[in-house]
Figure 1 (cartoon, rainbow, N blue to C red):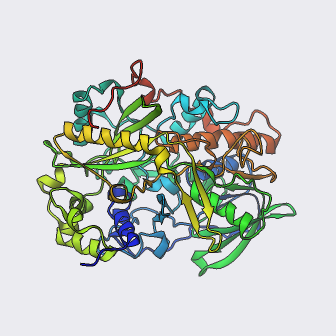
Figure 2: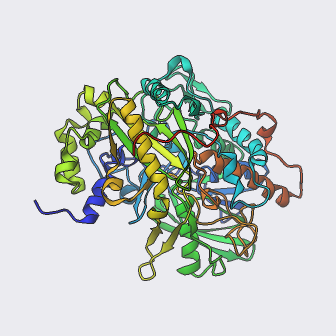
Figure 3: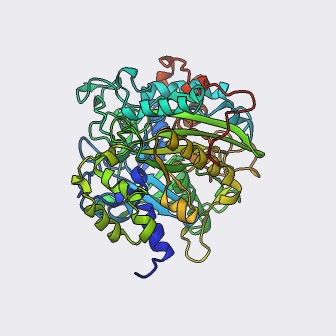
Length: 593
């Protein structure tokens, strides 16, 4: 057998990453395009680009404040029961690159990125966790006025909107109990917690209206959070913020991919490709423009406007700096003593905080259990050290991986002790946020530069704790293939690139997300966060967006007391991570070396 090329192995490795990339790569479903829009007018008060945790907040609040709003989402609208579930075609319907599908996978040499495309952005495929950043995160690099005390009211507002709660103790999944027992055996009970998650825990599969009048069903513990919940038991953004925006008159258009922003006489002209109309190029004008396409896509769009189109040529030289993968690290354990049952329950329910100084490097990360749909449990066994496929053959091509998947039973593969006794670990940490998003000089292709060596102390601590937890469960630890062979991290939590800062020399936007040199142009998503949050970042992205859109609306309307209508209903919440105990000197060191 000829030796596979590095690119072939990278592609294969990306397809072997469990819930992060395997499912979309080995699956397919013909989707019906649905734009779900009112007729797009030529001008609005505001245009919002993207519908993730920044865009959904901006669209909702602007509409509530009485502005005419156009919302442009490049992905599809996923109404009841449309998420792809055909597991036999690896190309049709799942991947953005092939059919405007749900998953956008970017293999960027030094960092592999997994994103979502669809109405609701990352909320469609994330693991539901709504976790506040530790107070220490705001101590360095953030603009004046940012601290936990100042942001907590906005966290509380997001918590109300997304109706967050931990998984009920009366119905804990097996994996939650296994994690709690492992933490206890390792002497880490004081750092263990049940995370707040945005899941409807009403009667399983029973239809009811949520607090915003949208139909949902209770969680059925199917483990499919990360590929789109067909029960609408996830409190995704289309069921709250975006539903309110639509009810207040916002024109929400899907399959509209923005390509250019430029100044206009009354604000900004936004050009986009309308995929629902055969790729027709369309333009709209708005007094205010909010870029909320996600950290990588927002940064790329602005880089193209500055460096390719020349329409926003005065954007800061810092554009693209401060990129972070939020310390994401993916690992597995196989052959555990007791069943882990990874396909039972919501994707993530628990976390363990690691917080200590390791040889001069201040490490903080959260160690969480994961899950994945039952249809890929056979595929995950290809990473099992006892199976040995990747140890002996390496990863070759997508077709080879599909064939191997079918050889071990594919979707119809029977549940076995091996599949039940397999666990997945998902970690997020405070990396150095010292990456860069750039366009290649000749080709203008996207490039992400990431300094693995300077962040290696974090990754090493995550690897060691993985081994500890795996041993505590009687299992065999395995790292994800891209990390094992190439030291390429995989992130689902890209941050930075359009940093907010107190001065134009230090960042791209001011403390409120308004772009320096371009009044009325805002970035309100993870791109403006000036550091890794360490914790799952969706809660912080949404809270910062709530803060900044409030500031913007107060200025736009001249009403210094404007607040989100739901702010009066939000109650203070104690984040579970705030209750963990960190011993003097930090948490205990790992047993593994």
